[in-house]
Image 1 (tube, helix red, strand yellow):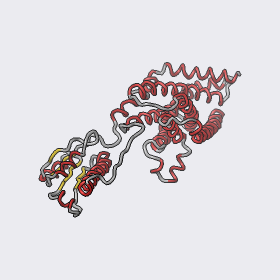
Image 2: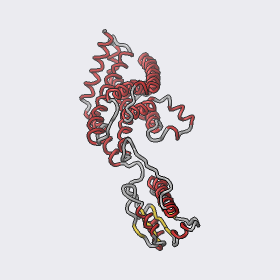
Image 3: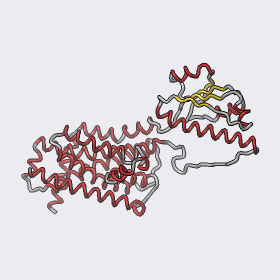
Image 4: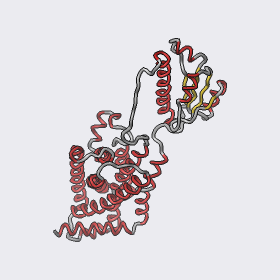
Length: 371
């Protein structure tokens, strides 16, 4: 019981020091509110409002149908462009896509001559160009097949109906907001514990703790539970006020279960932060050391790039990162409504990784105190 009391009181000391750190409190407020809301509403994943022009040399019913098929919000209403202004319009960046419909295009298509339709793309608009060219080709091909099929048989050859059961409008901001929260949890969990430990070492507070009847394990656990409590509380407020309130994202899963998984993830990531702090001698050195650890955890966990798109060896390496399993758990719980009976393999992997990081951090921390 004495050890639990020591851990509890040391954790209260951490919370008290955080209470008077106005800069850190301001950063916490920003990270879980503004930094979640703005990317979700301002950043668009995919094609949105892309500028299109059409050079209509055919002036047929089919060419008008192709122009009418490009609708907002993916594309702007196509503008008619003379042929002699095509190159100038692309060079000036006025349009991202310029479609050139040659003369006699409709007649050649109906006659089975397979005419060519030219789509000019301004590749300097990278994200819009690559994804937009794919979407544009899909839309134009669908219109051409539909027109040719109706002319030949009087009806469309295939009827395809797609329905999105979740996120019917396919708003990328819904998923981006959750990824922002996961990223901020990772950053804060590592930086809060690491900087707190190094600040005590630089100010001499750690030496004062060592003359008390305290063990390295008690000091570690106190830092872990106090910082985890702060981050879990900020996560809950961000989900309620920003994700569900301001953004209106419907979360179908159990919020309590997600927060419990978040606490488990914080156990692993805060232990990693303590381990990195034992390798550094100052806060600036810790910051430089944390960069090559945090960035791969954020970029390669499956949020920015799907795991299936990575090399097999990198997928296997990232299975040892707690962020990989936590991101998978987050989407499964909040968006799919998965319970422990479904996600228990990910939970077991996250628990094993957390215990491994904790043991390494405890051994290294004890050795650093002895030195």
